[in-house]
Length: 99
Image (cartoon, rainbow, N blue to C red; front, side, top):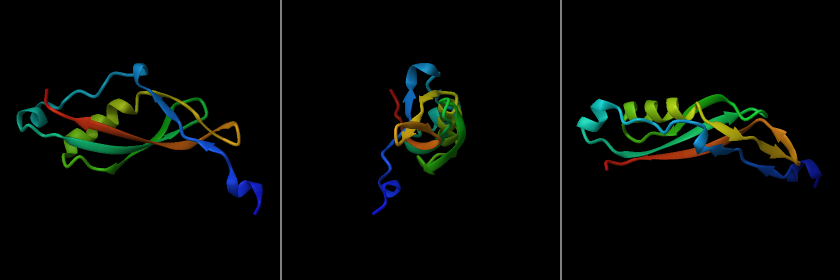
């Protein structure tokens, strides 16, 4: 086994204080839509979102879009591979629930 196969990896971590939380879309609020959206964010070595995608829909396109748009503005602590900052994917769940 080569050492590169066992590369120590740490995932990027979102700094939730670095961005505004997603706002409930008006139509989704009126329709009382709720759900959990699972998103993937490709994080650069400087902590910025390079790419984003919905991995698992909440069941509502407007909720998915609102969460993805808002959380793409967040800063992340970059992930590392073998102790060095590396461009890696972060998985983030966002739960939409009515207050």
